[in-house]
Length: 470
Ligand code: BYC
Image 1 (cartoon, rainbow, N blue to C red):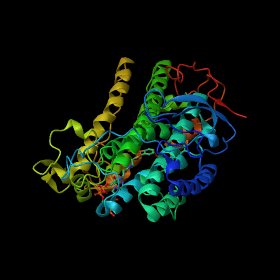
Image 2: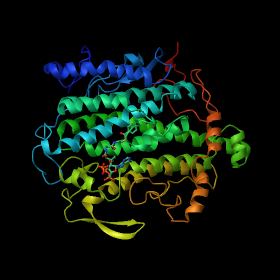
Image 3: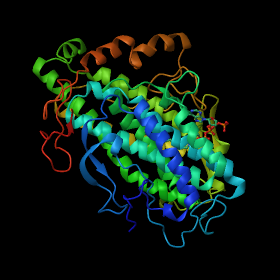
Image 4: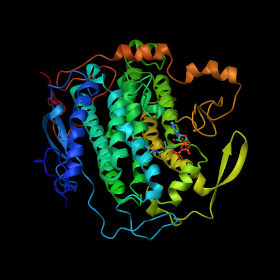
Protein backbone atom coordinates (compact mmCIF):
# COMPACT_ATOMS: atom_id res chain seq x y z
CA UNK A 1 0.00 0.00 0.00
CA UNK A 2 1.20 3.55 -0.76
CA UNK A 3 0.56 5.96 2.10
CA UNK A 4 0.12 9.59 1.18
CA UNK A 5 2.40 12.08 2.90
CA UNK A 6 0.18 14.90 4.18
CA UNK A 7 3.06 16.68 5.91
CA UNK A 8 4.25 17.62 2.43
CA UNK A 9 3.18 20.91 0.86
CA UNK A 10 1.74 18.83 -1.97
CA UNK A 11 0.44 15.52 -0.54
CA UNK A 12 1.66 12.71 -2.78
CA UNK A 13 2.62 9.08 -3.05
CA UNK A 14 5.10 9.61 -5.88
CA UNK A 15 8.14 10.46 -3.75
CA UNK A 16 8.12 14.11 -4.77
CA UNK A 17 10.88 14.94 -2.25
CA UNK A 18 13.14 12.66 -4.28
CA UNK A 19 12.87 14.98 -7.31
CA UNK A 20 13.55 18.55 -6.23
CA UNK A 21 13.17 20.06 -9.71
CA UNK A 22 9.75 18.52 -10.21
CA UNK A 23 8.72 19.45 -6.68
CA UNK A 24 9.70 23.09 -7.24
CA UNK A 25 7.84 23.23 -10.56
CA UNK A 26 4.66 21.86 -8.98
CA UNK A 27 5.02 24.16 -5.97
CA UNK A 28 5.17 27.01 -8.45
CA UNK A 29 1.92 25.82 -10.08
CA UNK A 30 0.15 25.26 -6.73
CA UNK A 31 -0.60 28.94 -5.91
CA UNK A 32 -1.88 29.43 -9.46
CA UNK A 33 -4.25 26.51 -8.91
CA UNK A 34 -5.44 27.97 -5.59
CA UNK A 35 -5.98 31.35 -7.23
CA UNK A 36 -7.99 29.64 -9.97
CA UNK A 37 -10.05 27.81 -7.32
CA UNK A 38 -10.68 31.11 -5.56
CA UNK A 39 -11.81 32.83 -8.76
CA UNK A 40 -13.49 29.99 -10.65
CA UNK A 41 -14.39 27.40 -7.98
CA UNK A 42 -17.65 27.31 -5.96
CA UNK A 43 -18.61 30.92 -5.44
CA UNK A 44 -19.09 32.26 -1.91
CA UNK A 45 -18.52 29.06 0.07
CA UNK A 46 -14.86 29.39 0.98
CA UNK A 47 -15.63 29.81 4.69
CA UNK A 48 -18.00 26.84 4.94
CA UNK A 49 -17.00 23.65 6.75
CA UNK A 50 -17.86 20.77 4.45
CA UNK A 51 -18.07 17.10 5.40
CA UNK A 52 -15.62 15.86 2.79
CA UNK A 53 -13.94 12.63 1.89
CA UNK A 54 -10.18 12.84 1.45
CA UNK A 55 -7.83 10.07 0.36
CA UNK A 56 -5.15 9.20 2.93
CA UNK A 57 -3.86 6.19 1.02
CA UNK A 58 -4.79 4.64 -2.28
CA UNK A 59 -5.87 1.25 -0.96
CA UNK A 60 -9.39 0.22 0.05
CA UNK A 61 -8.95 1.28 3.69
CA UNK A 62 -7.47 4.70 3.17
CA UNK A 63 -9.03 6.39 0.21
CA UNK A 64 -12.23 7.47 1.94
CA UNK A 65 -11.38 9.41 5.08
CA UNK A 66 -14.20 11.75 6.20
CA UNK A 67 -14.07 15.01 8.11
CA UNK A 68 -15.13 18.69 8.12
CA UNK A 69 -12.87 20.75 5.86
CA UNK A 70 -12.97 24.26 4.42
CA UNK A 71 -12.68 23.77 0.67
CA UNK A 72 -9.63 26.00 0.15
CA UNK A 73 -7.88 23.83 2.79
CA UNK A 74 -8.69 20.56 1.00
CA UNK A 75 -5.44 18.61 0.51
CA UNK A 76 -5.28 18.34 -3.25
CA UNK A 77 -2.49 15.98 -4.08
CA UNK A 78 -0.93 13.48 -6.44
CA UNK A 79 -1.96 9.88 -5.95
CA UNK A 80 -1.23 7.00 -8.27
CA UNK A 81 -2.59 3.48 -7.80
CA UNK A 82 0.08 1.05 -6.67
CA UNK A 83 2.31 -0.28 -9.47
CA UNK A 84 1.70 -3.75 -10.86
CA UNK A 85 5.04 -5.59 -10.76
CA UNK A 86 6.50 -6.18 -14.24
CA UNK A 87 3.34 -4.93 -15.93
CA UNK A 88 3.16 -5.80 -19.63
CA UNK A 89 1.37 -3.99 -22.45
CA UNK A 90 -2.03 -5.69 -22.83
CA UNK A 91 -3.09 -4.72 -26.38
CA UNK A 92 -1.98 -3.37 -29.74
CA UNK A 93 1.13 -4.10 -31.78
CA UNK A 94 3.52 -4.02 -28.79
CA UNK A 95 1.42 -6.45 -26.75
CA UNK A 96 3.46 -8.42 -24.23
CA UNK A 97 6.34 -5.95 -24.06
CA UNK A 98 7.07 -4.19 -20.76
CA UNK A 99 4.86 -1.17 -20.01
CA UNK A 100 6.65 2.18 -20.46
CA UNK A 101 7.85 4.16 -17.47
CA UNK A 102 8.83 7.06 -19.76
CA UNK A 103 7.12 8.56 -22.80
CA UNK A 104 8.48 7.16 -26.09
CA UNK A 105 9.55 10.08 -28.30
CA UNK A 106 7.34 9.06 -31.22
CA UNK A 107 4.16 9.18 -29.09
CA UNK A 108 4.99 12.27 -27.13
CA UNK A 109 2.65 14.72 -28.80
CA UNK A 110 -0.27 12.28 -29.01
CA UNK A 111 0.04 11.32 -25.36
CA UNK A 112 0.37 14.94 -24.32
CA UNK A 113 -2.77 15.75 -26.26
CA UNK A 114 -4.75 12.93 -24.65
CA UNK A 115 -3.63 14.05 -21.20
CA UNK A 116 -4.40 17.70 -21.92
CA UNK A 117 -7.87 16.83 -23.27
CA UNK A 118 -8.61 14.75 -20.20
CA UNK A 119 -7.12 17.39 -17.88
CA UNK A 120 -9.12 20.19 -19.49
CA UNK A 121 -12.45 18.58 -18.59
CA UNK A 122 -11.74 18.54 -14.86
CA UNK A 123 -11.46 22.28 -14.10
CA UNK A 124 -14.07 22.91 -16.80
CA UNK A 125 -16.68 20.99 -14.81
CA UNK A 126 -15.86 22.95 -11.64
CA UNK A 127 -16.34 26.18 -13.58
CA UNK A 128 -19.62 24.96 -15.04
CA UNK A 129 -20.96 24.20 -11.55
CA UNK A 130 -19.60 27.33 -9.90
CA UNK A 131 -22.93 28.96 -8.99
CA UNK A 132 -24.99 25.90 -8.11
CA UNK A 133 -24.33 26.16 -4.37
CA UNK A 134 -26.66 29.16 -4.22
CA UNK A 135 -29.68 27.07 -5.20
CA UNK A 136 -28.95 23.76 -3.47
CA UNK A 137 -32.03 21.60 -2.77
CA UNK A 138 -30.53 20.45 0.57
CA UNK A 139 -27.32 20.46 2.62
CA UNK A 140 -26.85 16.81 1.65
CA UNK A 141 -26.82 17.80 -2.03
CA UNK A 142 -24.65 20.82 -1.39
CA UNK A 143 -22.05 18.61 0.23
CA UNK A 144 -22.16 16.16 -2.68
CA UNK A 145 -21.63 19.01 -5.15
CA UNK A 146 -18.59 20.21 -3.24
CA UNK A 147 -17.22 16.68 -2.94
CA UNK A 148 -17.40 16.37 -6.70
CA UNK A 149 -15.81 19.80 -7.17
CA UNK A 150 -12.80 19.13 -4.95
CA UNK A 151 -12.26 15.75 -6.60
CA UNK A 152 -12.40 17.26 -10.08
CA UNK A 153 -9.78 19.68 -8.78
CA UNK A 154 -7.68 16.71 -7.71
CA UNK A 155 -8.13 15.07 -11.09
CA UNK A 156 -6.68 18.21 -12.60
CA UNK A 157 -3.69 17.77 -10.28
CA UNK A 158 -3.37 14.19 -11.51
CA UNK A 159 -3.02 15.31 -15.13
CA UNK A 160 -0.80 18.27 -14.25
CA UNK A 161 1.57 15.93 -12.44
CA UNK A 162 1.93 13.83 -15.60
CA UNK A 163 2.52 16.93 -17.73
CA UNK A 164 5.17 18.30 -15.35
CA UNK A 165 6.88 14.99 -14.66
CA UNK A 166 7.04 13.57 -18.19
CA UNK A 167 6.65 16.36 -20.76
CA UNK A 168 9.24 18.96 -19.75
CA UNK A 169 8.74 22.55 -20.73
CA UNK A 170 5.80 21.85 -23.09
CA UNK A 171 4.07 20.03 -20.26
CA UNK A 172 4.55 22.98 -17.88
CA UNK A 173 3.12 25.35 -20.48
CA UNK A 174 0.13 23.08 -21.01
CA UNK A 175 -0.43 23.00 -17.24
CA UNK A 176 -0.67 26.80 -17.23
CA UNK A 177 -3.07 26.73 -20.17
CA UNK A 178 -5.35 24.35 -18.24
CA UNK A 179 -5.98 27.24 -15.85
CA UNK A 180 -6.22 29.86 -18.61
CA UNK A 181 -9.03 28.32 -20.70
CA UNK A 182 -12.46 28.70 -19.13
CA UNK A 183 -15.79 27.01 -19.64
CA UNK A 184 -17.98 29.02 -22.02
CA UNK A 185 -15.31 31.70 -22.57
CA UNK A 186 -15.75 33.31 -25.99
CA UNK A 187 -12.00 33.66 -26.61
CA UNK A 188 -10.51 30.74 -24.70
CA UNK A 189 -13.15 28.06 -24.25
CA UNK A 190 -12.60 24.57 -22.90
CA UNK A 191 -11.59 21.98 -25.52
CA UNK A 192 -14.72 19.79 -25.68
CA UNK A 193 -18.18 21.24 -26.34
CA UNK A 194 -20.02 19.54 -23.46
CA UNK A 195 -17.70 21.32 -21.05
CA UNK A 196 -18.72 24.71 -22.39
CA UNK A 197 -22.44 24.11 -21.81
CA UNK A 198 -23.85 26.01 -18.83
CA UNK A 199 -24.94 23.95 -15.80
CA UNK A 200 -27.11 26.50 -14.12
CA UNK A 201 -29.69 24.26 -12.43
CA UNK A 202 -29.57 21.05 -10.44
CA UNK A 203 -31.52 19.00 -12.96
CA UNK A 204 -28.68 19.68 -15.40
CA UNK A 205 -26.15 18.78 -12.72
CA UNK A 206 -27.76 15.38 -12.16
CA UNK A 207 -27.90 14.77 -15.92
CA UNK A 208 -24.30 15.89 -16.32
CA UNK A 209 -23.08 13.61 -13.54
CA UNK A 210 -25.19 10.75 -14.91
CA UNK A 211 -24.11 11.09 -18.57
CA UNK A 212 -20.93 13.13 -18.77
CA UNK A 213 -19.17 11.70 -15.73
CA UNK A 214 -20.01 8.29 -17.16
CA UNK A 215 -18.13 9.27 -20.31
CA UNK A 216 -15.33 10.11 -17.87
CA UNK A 217 -15.55 6.59 -16.49
CA UNK A 218 -15.19 5.09 -19.99
CA UNK A 219 -12.36 7.40 -21.06
CA UNK A 220 -10.48 6.83 -17.80
CA UNK A 221 -10.97 3.07 -18.09
CA UNK A 222 -9.50 3.09 -21.58
CA UNK A 223 -6.56 5.26 -20.47
CA UNK A 224 -6.09 3.01 -17.41
CA UNK A 225 -5.03 0.28 -19.89
CA UNK A 226 -2.37 2.52 -21.47
CA UNK A 227 1.15 1.21 -22.04
CA UNK A 228 2.35 4.49 -20.48
CA UNK A 229 2.29 3.16 -16.93
CA UNK A 230 2.15 6.45 -14.96
CA UNK A 231 -0.98 7.41 -16.94
CA UNK A 232 -2.53 3.99 -16.34
CA UNK A 233 -1.87 4.16 -12.59
CA UNK A 234 -3.17 7.73 -12.33
CA UNK A 235 -6.42 6.85 -14.09
CA UNK A 236 -6.92 3.71 -12.00
CA UNK A 237 -7.02 5.77 -8.85
CA UNK A 238 -9.20 8.50 -10.40
CA UNK A 239 -11.80 5.85 -11.19
CA UNK A 240 -12.37 5.10 -7.49
CA UNK A 241 -13.43 8.73 -7.01
CA UNK A 242 -15.45 8.91 -10.22
CA UNK A 243 -17.96 6.33 -8.96
CA UNK A 244 -19.39 8.80 -6.43
CA UNK A 245 -20.02 11.40 -9.13
CA UNK A 246 -22.17 8.98 -11.11
CA UNK A 247 -23.92 7.95 -7.87
CA UNK A 248 -24.92 11.60 -7.39
CA UNK A 249 -26.35 11.66 -10.92
CA UNK A 250 -28.20 8.39 -10.71
CA UNK A 251 -29.70 8.93 -7.27
CA UNK A 252 -30.42 12.59 -8.04
CA UNK A 253 -32.46 11.66 -11.11
CA UNK A 254 -34.16 8.79 -9.21
CA UNK A 255 -35.25 11.30 -6.58
CA UNK A 256 -36.62 13.68 -9.23
CA UNK A 257 -38.62 10.80 -10.75
CA UNK A 258 -39.87 9.75 -7.31
CA UNK A 259 -41.12 13.25 -6.51
CA UNK A 260 -42.73 13.52 -9.92
CA UNK A 261 -44.61 10.25 -9.33
CA UNK A 262 -45.73 11.46 -5.91
CA UNK A 263 -47.10 14.65 -7.49
CA UNK A 264 -48.91 12.58 -10.14
CA UNK A 265 -50.48 10.46 -7.43
CA UNK A 266 -51.49 13.47 -5.32
CA UNK A 267 -53.08 15.14 -8.34
CA UNK A 268 -54.47 11.95 -9.88
CA UNK A 269 -53.12 13.27 -13.19
CA UNK A 270 -50.02 13.22 -15.37
CA UNK A 271 -50.87 16.57 -16.99
CA UNK A 272 -47.47 18.35 -17.21
CA UNK A 273 -49.03 21.75 -16.54
CA UNK A 274 -50.61 20.56 -13.29
CA UNK A 275 -47.43 18.81 -12.17
CA UNK A 276 -45.43 21.97 -12.82
CA UNK A 277 -48.01 24.03 -10.95
CA UNK A 278 -47.50 21.63 -8.02
CA UNK A 279 -43.79 22.50 -8.08
CA UNK A 280 -42.47 19.19 -9.45
CA UNK A 281 -40.69 18.20 -12.67
CA UNK A 282 -42.99 16.42 -15.13
CA UNK A 283 -41.52 13.35 -16.81
CA UNK A 284 -41.69 14.76 -20.39
CA UNK A 285 -39.58 17.68 -19.16
CA UNK A 286 -37.08 15.31 -17.58
CA UNK A 287 -36.99 13.42 -20.91
CA UNK A 288 -35.88 16.64 -22.64
CA UNK A 289 -33.01 17.08 -20.19
CA UNK A 290 -31.99 13.45 -20.72
CA UNK A 291 -32.07 14.00 -24.51
CA UNK A 292 -29.89 17.09 -24.23
CA UNK A 293 -27.17 15.77 -21.95
CA UNK A 294 -27.05 12.26 -23.41
CA UNK A 295 -26.63 13.52 -26.99
CA UNK A 296 -24.03 16.07 -25.92
CA UNK A 297 -22.06 13.41 -24.02
CA UNK A 298 -22.17 10.99 -26.97
CA UNK A 299 -20.03 13.44 -28.96
CA UNK A 300 -17.25 13.01 -26.38
CA UNK A 301 -16.43 9.59 -27.81
CA UNK A 302 -15.29 11.12 -31.13
CA UNK A 303 -16.17 9.99 -34.67
CA UNK A 304 -17.60 6.57 -35.48
CA UNK A 305 -14.76 6.02 -37.95
CA UNK A 306 -11.51 7.34 -36.55
CA UNK A 307 -7.92 6.86 -37.63
CA UNK A 308 -6.90 8.48 -34.32
CA UNK A 309 -8.58 5.72 -32.34
CA UNK A 310 -6.97 3.07 -34.59
CA UNK A 311 -3.48 4.52 -34.11
CA UNK A 312 -3.99 5.02 -30.37
CA UNK A 313 -4.97 1.37 -29.95
CA UNK A 314 -2.32 -0.12 -32.26
CA UNK A 315 0.39 1.97 -30.58
CA UNK A 316 -0.66 1.01 -27.06
CA UNK A 317 -1.79 4.47 -25.91
CA UNK A 318 -5.48 3.88 -25.32
CA UNK A 319 -7.43 0.59 -25.25
CA UNK A 320 -11.04 -0.42 -24.83
CA UNK A 321 -12.40 -0.15 -21.30
CA UNK A 322 -11.68 -3.42 -19.45
CA UNK A 323 -9.49 -4.64 -22.32
CA UNK A 324 -8.83 -7.88 -20.38
CA UNK A 325 -12.42 -9.02 -21.00
CA UNK A 326 -11.80 -9.37 -24.74
CA UNK A 327 -10.00 -12.23 -26.50
CA UNK A 328 -8.46 -10.43 -29.46
CA UNK A 329 -6.15 -7.61 -28.40
CA UNK A 330 -4.65 -6.84 -31.82
CA UNK A 331 -7.87 -6.36 -33.83
CA UNK A 332 -6.10 -6.63 -37.18
CA UNK A 333 -8.65 -9.06 -38.68
CA UNK A 334 -12.01 -7.94 -37.30
CA UNK A 335 -14.55 -5.52 -38.77
CA UNK A 336 -17.64 -3.78 -37.41
CA UNK A 337 -20.80 -3.16 -39.36
CA UNK A 338 -21.70 0.53 -39.19
CA UNK A 339 -24.68 2.45 -40.51
CA UNK A 340 -24.00 6.05 -41.53
CA UNK A 341 -26.22 8.44 -43.52
CA UNK A 342 -24.35 7.09 -46.59
CA UNK A 343 -25.53 3.52 -45.86
CA UNK A 344 -24.22 0.37 -44.17
CA UNK A 345 -20.58 -0.67 -44.45
CA UNK A 346 -18.03 -2.90 -42.76
CA UNK A 347 -15.29 -0.87 -41.13
CA UNK A 348 -11.97 -2.24 -39.80
CA UNK A 349 -12.53 -2.76 -36.08
CA UNK A 350 -9.46 -0.68 -35.21
CA UNK A 351 -11.08 2.35 -36.82
CA UNK A 352 -14.41 1.77 -35.10
CA UNK A 353 -13.25 1.71 -31.49
CA UNK A 354 -14.87 5.03 -30.60
CA UNK A 355 -18.16 3.46 -31.65
CA UNK A 356 -17.47 0.25 -29.70
CA UNK A 357 -16.88 2.38 -26.64
CA UNK A 358 -19.98 4.50 -27.29
CA UNK A 359 -22.13 1.37 -27.59
CA UNK A 360 -20.96 -0.07 -24.27
CA UNK A 361 -21.42 3.37 -22.69
CA UNK A 362 -25.03 3.47 -23.89
CA UNK A 363 -25.66 0.02 -22.39
CA UNK A 364 -24.36 1.33 -19.08
CA UNK A 365 -26.61 4.39 -19.37
CA UNK A 366 -29.63 2.09 -19.88
CA UNK A 367 -29.32 0.66 -16.37
CA UNK A 368 -30.67 3.78 -14.67
CA UNK A 369 -33.41 4.18 -17.27
CA UNK A 370 -34.64 0.63 -16.59
CA UNK A 371 -34.74 1.32 -12.87
CA UNK A 372 -36.67 4.59 -13.29
CA UNK A 373 -39.09 2.99 -15.71
CA UNK A 374 -39.76 0.16 -13.25
CA UNK A 375 -40.74 2.68 -10.59
CA UNK A 376 -42.90 4.58 -13.10
CA UNK A 377 -44.62 1.32 -14.04
CA UNK A 378 -45.13 0.38 -10.40
CA UNK A 379 -46.79 3.77 -9.87
CA UNK A 380 -49.32 2.77 -12.54
CA UNK A 381 -48.26 5.31 -15.19
CA UNK A 382 -48.03 4.52 -18.91
CA UNK A 383 -45.21 7.06 -19.37
CA UNK A 384 -41.67 5.79 -20.00
CA UNK A 385 -38.27 7.47 -20.14
CA UNK A 386 -35.78 6.52 -22.85
CA UNK A 387 -32.33 7.33 -24.19
CA UNK A 388 -32.20 9.22 -27.47
CA UNK A 389 -30.71 7.42 -30.47
CA UNK A 390 -26.93 7.84 -30.84
CA UNK A 391 -27.69 9.61 -34.14
CA UNK A 392 -29.76 12.36 -32.54
CA UNK A 393 -28.34 15.92 -32.32
CA UNK A 394 -24.77 14.90 -32.97
CA UNK A 395 -22.02 17.47 -33.69
CA UNK A 396 -19.15 15.01 -34.18
CA UNK A 397 -18.91 12.02 -36.52
CA UNK A 398 -20.94 10.55 -39.34
CA UNK A 399 -24.28 11.85 -38.01
CA UNK A 400 -23.05 15.38 -37.27
CA UNK A 401 -25.57 18.02 -38.31
CA UNK A 402 -28.06 15.44 -39.67
CA UNK A 403 -31.77 16.07 -39.07
CA UNK A 404 -32.58 12.98 -37.02
CA UNK A 405 -35.35 12.53 -34.47
CA UNK A 406 -34.67 11.04 -30.98
CA UNK A 407 -35.68 7.61 -32.33
CA UNK A 408 -32.91 7.83 -34.93
CA UNK A 409 -34.99 8.46 -38.08
CA UNK A 410 -33.76 10.90 -40.71
CA UNK A 411 -36.37 13.57 -41.41
CA UNK A 412 -36.93 16.80 -43.30
CA UNK A 413 -34.66 19.52 -42.01
CA UNK A 414 -37.39 22.11 -41.67
CA UNK A 415 -39.55 19.82 -39.58
CA UNK A 416 -36.51 18.83 -37.53
CA UNK A 417 -35.67 22.47 -36.71
CA UNK A 418 -39.28 23.07 -35.69
CA UNK A 419 -39.49 19.94 -33.56
CA UNK A 420 -36.23 20.44 -31.69
CA UNK A 421 -37.88 22.58 -28.99
CA UNK A 422 -40.13 19.62 -28.17
CA UNK A 423 -37.15 17.27 -27.78
CA UNK A 424 -34.64 19.34 -25.81
CA UNK A 425 -35.35 21.98 -23.15
CA UNK A 426 -36.89 25.14 -24.63
CA UNK A 427 -36.32 28.58 -23.10
CA UNK A 428 -39.68 28.24 -21.31
CA UNK A 429 -38.68 24.82 -19.92
CA UNK A 430 -35.39 26.20 -18.64
CA UNK A 431 -37.17 29.18 -17.07
CA UNK A 432 -39.53 26.79 -15.29
CA UNK A 433 -36.68 24.64 -13.98
CA UNK A 434 -34.87 27.76 -12.80
CA UNK A 435 -38.03 28.88 -11.00
CA UNK A 436 -37.84 25.70 -8.88
CA UNK A 437 -34.26 26.36 -7.81
CA UNK A 438 -34.45 27.82 -4.32
CA UNK A 439 -31.80 27.29 -1.72
CA UNK A 440 -32.78 24.94 1.13
CA UNK A 441 -30.23 24.83 3.93
CA UNK A 442 -32.03 23.60 7.06
CA UNK A 443 -30.41 20.26 7.95
CA UNK A 444 -32.56 17.34 6.75
CA UNK A 445 -34.96 19.48 4.67
CA UNK A 446 -35.42 19.02 0.91
CA UNK A 447 -36.66 21.30 -1.85
CA UNK A 448 -40.19 20.44 -3.00
CA UNK A 449 -39.15 19.23 -6.47
CA UNK A 450 -36.94 16.38 -5.25
CA UNK A 451 -37.51 13.42 -2.91
CA UNK A 452 -35.07 12.85 -0.03
CA UNK A 453 -32.26 10.32 -0.61
CA UNK A 454 -32.60 6.87 0.95
CA UNK A 455 -29.70 7.42 3.34
CA UNK A 456 -27.19 10.00 4.48
CA UNK A 457 -23.46 10.04 3.86
CA UNK A 458 -21.06 7.60 5.53
CA UNK A 459 -23.83 6.19 7.77
CA UNK A 460 -24.73 9.61 9.18
CA UNK A 461 -28.41 10.55 9.39
CA UNK A 462 -29.94 12.72 6.69
CA UNK A 463 -30.42 15.49 9.27
CA UNK A 464 -26.68 15.82 9.76
CA UNK A 465 -25.33 19.30 9.07
CA UNK A 466 -23.20 18.25 6.08
CA UNK A 467 -22.18 21.82 5.35
CA UNK A 468 -21.75 24.32 8.15
CA UNK A 469 -22.30 27.76 6.66
CA UNK A 470 -20.83 30.76 8.42
N1 BYC B 1 -15.27 17.96 -29.34
O1 BYC B 1 -10.97 10.73 -34.62
P1 BYC B 1 -11.85 11.65 -33.88
C1 BYC B 1 -14.38 13.48 -17.96
C2 BYC B 1 -11.78 16.19 -32.66
S1 BYC B 1 -15.01 13.22 -19.52
C3 BYC B 1 -14.32 18.63 -30.02
O2 BYC B 1 -13.27 11.70 -34.20
P2 BYC B 1 -10.63 10.84 -31.47
C4 BYC B 1 -15.17 14.29 -17.02
C5 BYC B 1 -10.52 15.41 -32.34
O3 BYC B 1 -9.75 16.03 -31.31
C6 BYC B 1 -13.73 12.34 -20.40
N2 BYC B 1 -13.46 18.04 -30.85
O4 BYC B 1 -11.80 11.42 -32.34
C7 BYC B 1 -16.54 14.19 -16.97
C8 BYC B 1 -9.84 15.33 -33.68
O5 BYC B 1 -9.10 16.51 -33.95
P3 BYC B 1 -7.77 16.43 -34.89
C9 BYC B 1 -12.77 13.26 -21.11
C10 BYC B 1 -13.54 16.70 -31.02
O6 BYC B 1 -9.41 11.65 -31.65
C11 BYC B 1 -17.28 14.99 -16.11
C12 BYC B 1 -10.99 15.29 -34.67
O7 BYC B 1 -12.12 15.82 -33.98
N3 BYC B 1 -11.61 12.52 -21.56
O8 BYC B 1 -13.34 13.02 -17.66
O9 BYC B 1 -10.57 9.39 -31.61
C13 BYC B 1 -16.62 15.86 -15.25
C14 BYC B 1 -11.26 13.90 -35.12
O10 BYC B 1 -11.25 13.07 -33.97
C15 BYC B 1 -14.49 15.94 -30.33
C16 BYC B 1 -11.29 12.32 -22.81
O11 BYC B 1 -11.96 12.72 -23.74
C17 BYC B 1 -15.39 16.62 -29.46
N4 BYC B 1 -16.34 15.97 -28.78
O12 BYC B 1 -11.27 11.09 -30.04
C18 BYC B 1 -15.25 15.96 -15.29
C19 BYC B 1 -10.05 11.53 -23.06
N5 BYC B 1 -14.35 14.65 -30.70
O13 BYC B 1 -6.85 15.42 -34.27
C20 BYC B 1 -14.52 15.16 -16.16
C21 BYC B 1 -9.05 12.16 -23.97
C22 BYC B 1 -13.36 14.62 -31.59
O14 BYC B 1 -8.26 16.01 -36.22
N6 BYC B 1 -9.53 12.51 -25.31
N7 BYC B 1 -12.85 15.84 -31.78
O15 BYC B 1 -7.26 17.86 -34.83
C23 BYC B 1 -9.67 11.69 -26.38
O16 BYC B 1 -9.53 10.51 -26.25
C24 BYC B 1 -9.99 12.23 -27.73
O17 BYC B 1 -9.37 13.43 -27.89
C25 BYC B 1 -11.48 12.42 -28.04
C26 BYC B 1 -11.64 12.34 -29.57
C27 BYC B 1 -12.34 11.36 -27.36
C28 BYC B 1 -11.96 13.76 -27.63
